[in-house]
Image (cartoon, rainbow, N blue to C red; front, side, top):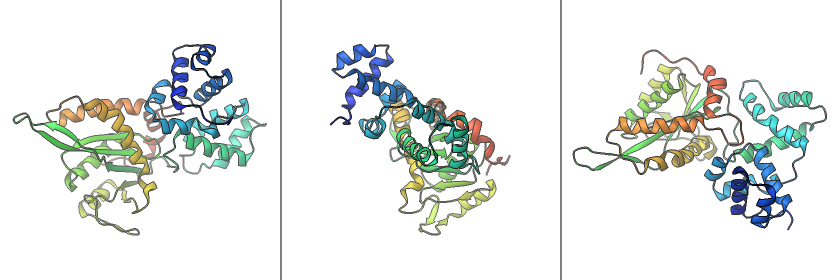
Length: 328
C-alpha cells in the first residue's frame, strides 16, 4: 500500500534526527526508509511550521492525524505558498466582517495562478483540521471568554498538620487568541467561581462580550437547552462588567470544546511540572501556576508562526471592552 503512513515511532525519529542536524541520507539508511519517504515527512514538518518540542508533546494519534494519508501527498510549491498564506488568513478571519471570500481575493491578487475559490476553501479546511484538530469554530476577537474547572484537582500542604488539602483548578480562555488564564481556588462554590472569573477579566485587562461557563451549579441554577437560569450573583456580576452570560448548551460539546482543549494542554504543561513540588498556601501555588502559564501563552501555536500572547496583544486585546475601575 503505497499511501500507508509510516510507523509513528519512525516519524518521530526522522524529525529528531533532522532537528539534530543529521543528513537525509543518514536518516534514510539508519531507519531503513526510502529517501523519498524521509524527504516527504521532513517537507511536511517544515511546511506545517512545527518544531521538535511540539512533536514530542503530541500523542501518536495526534501525529497520525498530522501526517495522515491526506497530508502526505507530494507538496508542490503552489500548495506550499497557499499553506504559508493560511496563518495570516486565520488571524484576519477573526475580525468582524472578514470572510473566506475576502481572503481568497487577497490570495489570488498575490498569486494570480493560484487555486480557485472552491479548492482554496477545501485546502483551508484540511489545513485547519490538521494543525488544530480540536477547534473548528471561527471565533471573533473580543467576543467570548470560556470558563471551566479541570477534572483533576491540585493540592496545598497544611503547614501545621502536614495534611494535603485539595484545591480546584480554574481555567479561562479567550476564543479568538486562545490566550489563557488559570488559577487554583479553594472550591467551585459561587463566591470562589465569581472571584476567579473576575480575576480572569482583570488578567485579560478587558471584558469580552460574553462569558461562556459550563452548566456549573455555581453559575446556573436551572439547566435548560433553550434558556438556562443564571444565579443572581453571577447575573449581578455580568451587569457590573456590562457583559452577558451564555452557558454552554446541554448536549452540545462543541460549545465548550475550546476550554476543554485548553484544560488538556494545561494538564501537560502545568500539572506535570507541579506534581513533584509542594505549596503551603494558595498564593504560593498560584505564583507557580502563573509562571508556567506565562510560558504556555508565549509558546508558538501548532503550525503557526505566532503565540497566544502575540495574538492577544496584536488582535484581541483592543477588541475587549474596558473594565470598570471598581471591582465587583
